[in-house]
Image (cartoon, rainbow, N blue to C red; front, side):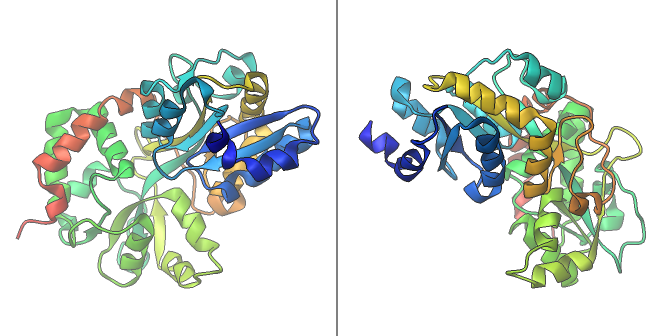
Length: 340
């Protein structure tokens, strides 16, 4: 147990003065992004928060700790990691009137094992100079008119697998295989880099459009440490695919109650707080995402991208096709890049 709690040592000593106890958070999200949120929670409740950040292996860590795990709340990004936590047996159900009132059904696990907090859209970054149109569909990305003009990161990356899985959910595997082949043949180069580097490629004239997440636009727009990223954003516009029909594919950040939470009551208080309007708006502003709570507002930066119409298909219906989507990426040789 000493080793398990070592990562919390400083936070635990700082929190000892709080009569209302503490809550331990295992997070895939960087501490600086969630700290303003946790500070607001502590100010409101007197409950100290301790954060252990893991960029990988979170589920395996909790599994190894077993019943002695100090984890109370799991914070993560991406439906894949939420379902991984559930399937890995490290979460427990929470049936809570406050949480269920605040978080729409489509952003909750059917078994109450996890709950969405914010969403981000998988959108098209488009060159302001070379792309005249202001609307687009995902289906259109396979149109030969875009041949040699599309950039994208690794097809097996979780962000892309989520989108490809949504295409299977809407159109079936056969259609999606053909579509993926068409998209592959329209690529300007082999898939590589990050979402931000796709924006850089548009600014450099290497491609006209790219797939990327909305929150990276906010990160680049406000990046004072690397001001060249602001120039990349100035060269592009954000197009929300399928705004005229089913809506844009979104993914979520979310929370879950750890299976053996030693501070369960405090953990549920934190989860209730995170589902509230004030917390949703703080969180959304910090991470440049959209609150899931109806009526909660995104930040001014996010509003500047334009209005998003989210795909209404429940993410649980999308997630079940992720494995098949990954198999299709390999089947069509997507990461080999365009055929010569």
